[in-house]
Length: 74
Image (cartoon, rainbow, N blue to C red; front, top):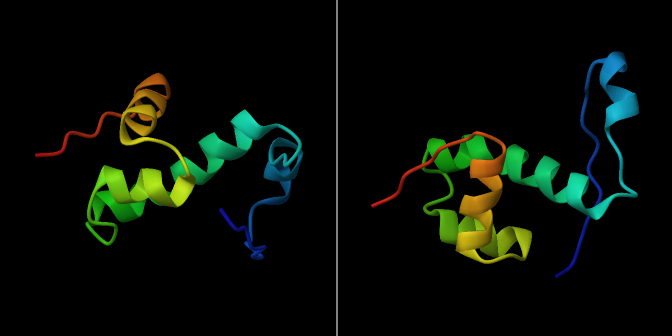
């Protein structure tokens, strides 16, 4: 999987919590960034979101569940 860097604007107080050294935190952050687009159907399925993140669909559903984000698909 290839990565890119984008600039986002966040409140200054968030800066200490945005880490790139911890792979688990990075995966959770990226999954949360995709979540609104899954809900809005701009990303058609959890499977596509999982593919973008480089994990399985079941791992993504488990990750959302651990973060107390429930998303049901057909």
